[in-house]
Every structure is written in C-alpha cells, then in structure tokens.
Image (cartoon, rainbow, N blue to C red; front, top):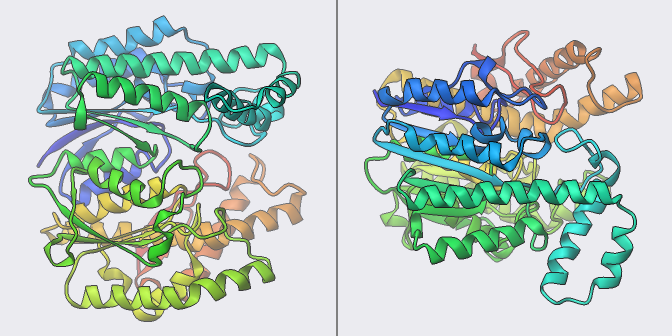
Length: 499
C-alpha cells in the first residue's frame, strides 16, 4: 500500500479529512500530523515541532505533500496574521533542503488573498473596519502600476485608511512574496518534484494578481516549465496532489459544458475563464485534455458559472429569472450524464454555477434522471477551483478502487458531497442562519449556541436526506456527529452511517 504524508494547509476537514477519504478510495495510507501539531483557527501550528514530525516520517513515505503555509507560518490564517519576520519564515523553509527525500516531494503555497469584506475572522484585526477599503486599495495600486488614471481615487482612499494599517498590510504581502520567491529557488535546486503556487480569492486586478504575474515571470526565466504550476485554488490542493502522487499513467479527460457559451465566464473569486480553471486543475492532477470523448478515461461534466456571478439569489423574481435561463439546459445536461453512465463511462460532475453550493436547477433534473451513485465524483463547494480539483481527485481515485472496502469509501465520500454541498450549503445553511437570527438576533453560531445549532443542522439534513432518491434510502447523518470546525455556519463536518 502506498504511504503518503500530508502537511495540510490548515486543520479544517477540507484540508485533512477529504484527502484521507480520497486516499482510502485509492487504497493508500495518508499520514497527517497529530492534531496538536496543526493550527487551530487563529492559533498557529508549532512550526519547529511540525518540521521535526516531518523529518521523522519522511524516510518511510513514498511521497510528501507539503503546505509551505503550514510549515513556514503555522497555517493559512497564520500566513496573514502572525508577526514572524521574513528571516524566521525563510529559515523554516530552508529546513526542507535537509529532508531525506522519498520518491516524490510536492509542495504548495498560496499567494495571500485580499478579501472584499469587513471581516477579520481570518485576517488581521483591522480588517473588521478597513477590509473593503484595503481590497479597493489593492486594486487601485495595481491599476495605477499599469498606467491607468486612478491617482485621485487612490489618494482619496489612502486618506481613509490609517498609515499604520496600510504599512502592515504591505509588509505582510512582501513577506509572503519573498517566501514564494524562495520556494521558486528551492524548485530550481531540485528540492521539489512539483511546486504549486496558487492564488486564493482572486480578481483580475489586485496585488495578488500582480504578484502572481511577477512570480510567473521568474518561473519562465528560470525555465521551470511544468514543474511549477500557478492557478486559482487553495483548499483542494491536498486532495489533488494526493491522487497525483498515486498515478501510474496520465489520465485523459474530455470536458463537456452544460451551457457551452458560458465556458468563457470567470467564476467568482477567480481571475480567468472557467475553461482555463478546468484545464489547470487537470494539469495539476497530472492529466491531459483530449478533444474526443471516445478517447477519454474520464468525462468532466461542468455546470459553468451563472450569469449573476454570485451565490444564488432566492428572492422570487431573481429565482424565476435564473430558472427561465437554466431549466432547459440543465434537463439536457442531466440526460447527457445519464447516457454516459448507461454506457459505463466515468463521469465527474463539477457544479460551479454558484459559489458555495449546488445549482438547485441541476439538482432537480439530476435526481429525476440519474442514479447519482454511479457518478465517479460530484462537487459544488466554495470556489470553482475548490470544487473542480476535489471532484477530479475523487474521480481519478474511483478508477483505482478494486476492493469492496474501496467501493464503500467511494460511495461514502460521494454521498457526503451531496449532503454537504447540496443539502447543507444550498439549503440548510440559510435555514439555520435564519433560525439563529430569530433566536438570538445574530445569524451566526456562538459558543453558547453551538450545541443547539449542530442539533438543528443534524435534524434538518436528515429530513432533507430522506427525500433524496437512492441516497436517502442508504444513508443518514449519524447522531451527534455534526460539528462546526471553526465555530461558524460557513462550513460543517459530520459522519454518515448506513441504514
């Protein structure tokens, strides 16, 4: 059995549990550091102890999958919030040179995001007041650097943000950029077999996009080619690289879009057309695109970004407008998927019409026409890159399943995706937030309401799950298993049990 070690991006299930579940499908052992060596929301991981753990397990592993954010800063949030100096961070990165190399070493790091929200849960404290302005400031700095006439806007905005906050914001970005440059240097010296530099919550303009262009220039100058990949993504990378490390050949993918003309749309939180995101995620997993359906090992069925470029607006007028545009193509899309499955083709369904949840217009047709248990994979969570990468990883892993235990792992993860991405993200999440607002005046969980919130979610999920064809006859959410990994309703974790 292949043995992999993963230093995850952070401690959330998407970065720890998902890769382990996918590894089970592929009959591989995936080691994670002990929980006490990982970050805990805003508390960074103990970087030195984490590096010691990695050094101890590396000789016994076939591949290492390394989040540099975790190793260098102590986690994804720590990369944005800690006060460690650049010199301290680079010294931690330097330790990787001394590792006893197994067969494969893949590393990944994230170009630090700039969210457009006055919310400091994952950012420095001043983001609660100045987040939106800093996002705009970043965009104007980039546009000014390209010669656009935005100086008056930039000067006006700078006067609204305290100088100390602007300086701190820029210092943190400089630190992150220097770490990414140092990672490129390690790549040139053969420390990594593959380096992924991804960009989180991107947009066409902003310092993140500008830094990405600079890094790509160095990648090209250094002749690193396909040994360094750059694309939008973050939380899916552990899953993608886990499967890539297990490949014995290059999988071939044929891509079909439910609405072909929408393949040029840019998904929310990304900076390129969805067709390019799909292509880059296929390259990241070690696959190749093919033009003919008949020559493909996998069919990637993509429900592309909607026209609204945001989460689904469920107000009657907006919902009716989306339904008028989407209902007919979704019916034809589901029919096409059913035909592929009837022909025993491996179909990977990437549902990225809306961020943070399934497309209800597709789901209505899918469950009416398709035995979803036959899909190779399904995903509809968070960003388009998150969804596509995770679905590709599960789909490729499903082709490695030979035993009954692997088949059970495949069905478990497939059901888990529909329960979380469809039932929770597109339904129960809004319901529980409305319930919390009615109970407490705040549409979010707190330490005092966490237990009640989890119990509410469990009941609501099981009620909806009963109504799903096939899945509702096979699974239920296990009693007492729902939890809120970061104490908020944005993401959940839970166990399924067979009926």
